[in-house]
Structure formats: structure tokens, C-alpha cells
Image (cartoon, rainbow, N blue to C red; front, side, top):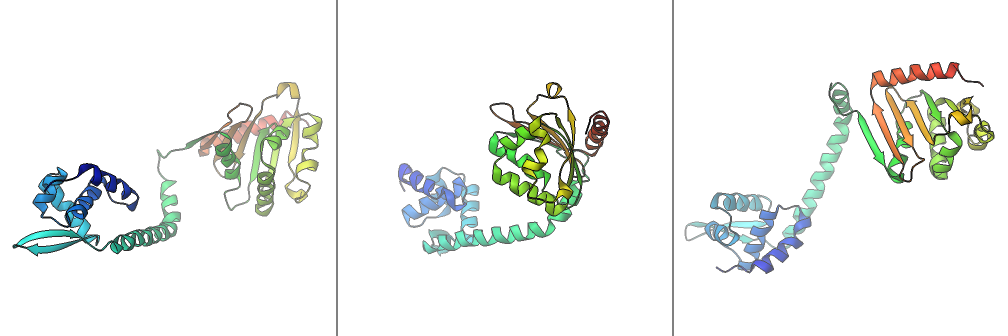
Length: 268
């Protein structure tokens, strides 16, 4: 049996999106080209060892893509009807949907166990405009009311963020009842921050602002203490903005303590 390697390779590549391994695609393509073969012949033409070839043939048969027959008292394999590929693809979709549904059901339990791990990942890094936007989205990702604390160049951040995101951000803060205290530069723009940006939401969530001399706080950055145990750092003054989210109770509490010390040293 002579195998047209180029033809088989090309067809195998076309099957790459079907969810079959490279070896499975090679075996399937070989069977399709020859119309059927014994395991020893499949191993010979695909250059796989016999045990591997036999395992792959069995797996393809279980998936319903090839038939297992008896010829001359030997096992013989041939390709099933092409429509079986559609059924196989649909079965993969069904299994994926079932897997998603089951995962969603047990996710709260998994998250609970994950939170107890002593060495779990605690730092997430974001680079580039679209990625950095998710830092602000994380501020309002929870479902509980809390007090947000921040050092910020408030007016510059509003310029940086898309207007639609700002509107959604403030509305979610209002719905959750998130209050905010922030330390910002003492500029005319920052002093009018609430009137300009929070005028469409309840005054209950207007930011309680304290001011520092603008010359001492010129940075285009934001540090936010939020949620139960998170701190975010955003640098949007660079050509490529970057952001970091740190999830750690001790760091969160220490930063909150530093904020309170800063708060006492500022003016209304």
C-alpha cells in the first residue's frame, strides 16, 4: 500500500478544527484514502508503531468515525459515512455545554476552596489600553457594598477612560452603594470632579474628596483599595498603560492604614 503523504497531510490539516489529535487525523486520512485497512497496514503507512495505531483505531471507532469489521478472521477498519463527522462535532458541542453548566454549578465551591490555598496566585498584570480597562471593571465586579479608597489624579483618569465605561462604572457603583474617599491634586478641575462626572447619580455615592498640592502629586496614576482584599495600581501616563491587581488581605489592610494616615494630613 503506497501512501500519498502530501495528499494525506493536506487533508489531515483540514481536519485540524474537528478536535482530533494529529495522529488521529493521520490515521483517519489514511483510511479514507485506501477505503479501509488492517491495523498492521495502518501502522505501516502512517509510520506509527502497531500498539499506537491500534489504540488510535479503537478510539476513532468509539467516537463513531470508523467501523470495526472482521475480514479473513482479522480486524479490519474503514471510514464511516462522512455525516458521522457532523454528529461527532455536535456531540463535542453538547459535551462542552454540559461541562460549562456543571462548572457553573460548582464554581462557588471551587472558589471557596481556592481562597483557602496558601500559595495561590495573587497578582495580575495588565498591559495596553483594552487590558487596563479591566482593572476598573474589577472594582465593581462584586455584589456587595464597600468603601473604596483611592489616591488619584481624578480629572486625568476621566480623560483616559471611555465615556461609556465611566457611565457604566458609576451606575454600578450607585446600584451597589459603593462609597468612595479619594485624595487628589488641588486643581480647579479636580475640585469640580463630582459636579462634572457624578451629577447623574445619587449624591450618596459622590466622592468624598481631600486635596494635596498639585505640585506634590503630578503623577498620572491611581492606587485604589477596594473590595474585601484587593489593591489596584494603574499607570496611564505612559504610551502603553499598565495596571496591577494585588489580592491579599494583609497588603489591603496595610494600604488602608496608610490611606487613613494620608487622609488626616490632607485638607477638605
